[in-house]
Image (cartoon, rainbow, N blue to C red; front, side, top):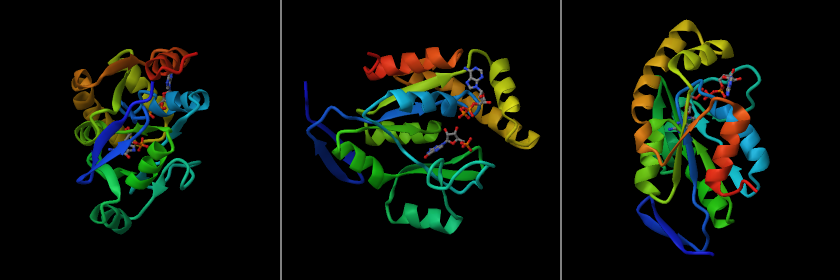
Length: 202
Ligand code: ADP
Ligand code: 5GP
């Protein structure tokens, strides 16, 4: 059944004649968000993955415009000041990450389901501005496994790992704020569970 959904966007109320609403996927660094989102997007037809802007430098292999829009501090300032960010946050006390507003709105207007991979602060902002968004928390099977995955990825220095683990404690303490908690014990199972939540598991 199609129904009308409205939400608040930058002071304006947007109404679309569709059931599409964003899905937020959050969870601590290293839990496997990127790993799970990849097969999810391959299987979830009708979904559209938001590409965030960030001031962090690219990791080897990351492509500008594909994994992130890599921007300078000045460019990020301008995006925020001109109201082009749907949400944004300083993540791990260092770099800024944010969701460009326009592509999300365009996807919704086209009836696509935007999937946003966000930190806790970003998820909270979306909860306030888009209450119809479905919020999923991806949790690790254990603290030891989270640490193991973060180290195993080999993309951060020890100092960065410690910072991310510190953030992870706050994030894990907030999992009850989310509509669903999915444990990423096994990628295929976690992906299937998220597809089921999205109602596209057939
Ligand atoms: P995030 O995007 O949440 O920071 P990644 O997707 O980069 O996390 O995953 C972190 C590391 O954990 C990667 O090396 C990835 O291969 C591994 N990983 C992800 N999911 C699982 C899983 N279910 N079991 C084992 N290892 C996993
Ligand atoms: P990474 O540096 O590992 O790519 O990302 C660090 C964290 O930033 C991720 O755990 C992710 O949740 C968060 N993040 C990525 N994009 C955004 C965004 O657009 N907004 C917010 N608030 N957080 C983001």
